Amino acid sequence: MNPRKPRLDGKVAVVTGAGAHSDVAGTGQATAVLLAQEGAKVLLTDRSAENAGKTLAVIEEEGGTASVFAGDVTRSADCRAMTETAVERYGGLHILFNNVGLSYPGTVVDVQEEHWDEIMAVNLKAMMLASRFAIPAMMDAGGGSIINMASVDGFRSGWSYNVAYETSKGGVIALTINMAVQHGRDGIRVNCIAPGHLHGSFTAGLSDAHRELRWRSTPLGTEGTAWDVAHAAVFLAGDESRWITGITLPVDAGSSIALPLSVLPRDEGGILPDAESARF
Image 1: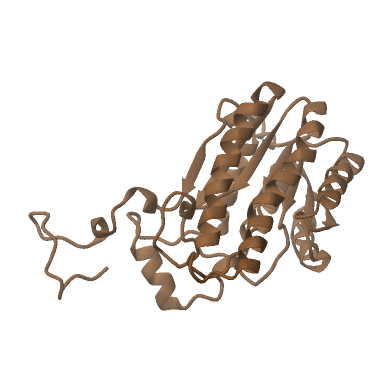
Image 2: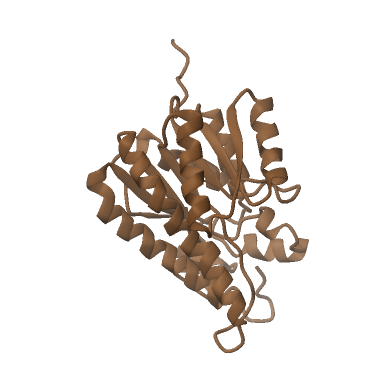
């Protein structure tokens, strides 16, 4: 039997927010590593060249091909240069993983206006700008796949007081649908991934008790990592998903389909226990 050819052999990918920002792998770093493992040449974009260099070291140690682009994807000029760099270094562009994101707390009553503006710029505007320049390059290459990072918080609420974050992620889902429709005939597929409350660099500061509460509140009762998102991204980047566009793929241990009480233990008749004995 012939060995399996890497699924993304000959493809060129750009990953935004690809740097290592803690000892725990984030979705950008994990996805960049898996894309390279599948044969893609990867441009590692991050504001910090040093952080992107840490991801580069992992890829090169495994024999993959990647390089660093230091830039701010909230700036149009940087997004243009990012795409041009990928084409110049590797001959084209086929995959864009729009990954950058941040969050600040606050309800609509008390969120700081500057925090709202920053979140919208990083979480939403950056995806529009990166896609603006990536799509023509993908068309020149015969087509491509754009994967946007959304969140289950984009279509449900209640876990935290993050009105700006949740609003931005709802916008990512709407942006994904629009681009999928508008650019499908250009050979561009656009999908998004909606992670649940996984453990990654974004949540590396959470206490063990907080982490346990999160995973125990899911139907699977397990904790996800950035690598679970990365595997989904590789699938959406490759030809196995060639007939899939415009979707939001939850990677969330089923949390988005379960009512809060559904994960509580029940007696043999399926009845919920009284409030005193109810424990996740």
